Image (tube, rainbow, N blue to C red; front, side):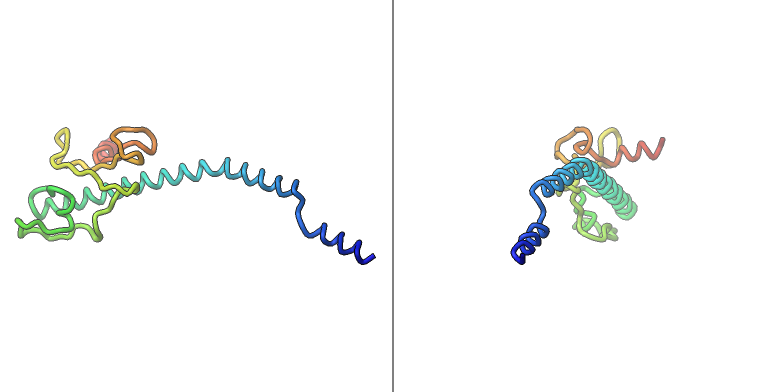
Length: 149
């Protein structure tokens, strides 16, 4: 009699293979449905971070110009005093030069193309010019166009 009770208790403690498989299938479906949405939000956050950092760098370049009467030759002049100027009032950034969300330095060109004073850009996730979606370039002049519209 006692042996039957022990066997019955042992069977009641665990899950059957079918129950475990059902749970695994449900978890797989949830990951398949929710996962892509989470990754899209992550990509959106990276692009938003890059846009904010480019805007911050642009503001620092404009402040540098007010003091020095020229734009920086390269972005390092925002944090390190150039040897040839006494008007430098920097550092113009609170921290070191940021890298883009994909851990690459921002691209800076002065003078910029098409008559712009300077260009600041990131090539996006793929690190190559052009691209779509998360691989699309992020730059300061696109936000300037949007601000004028």
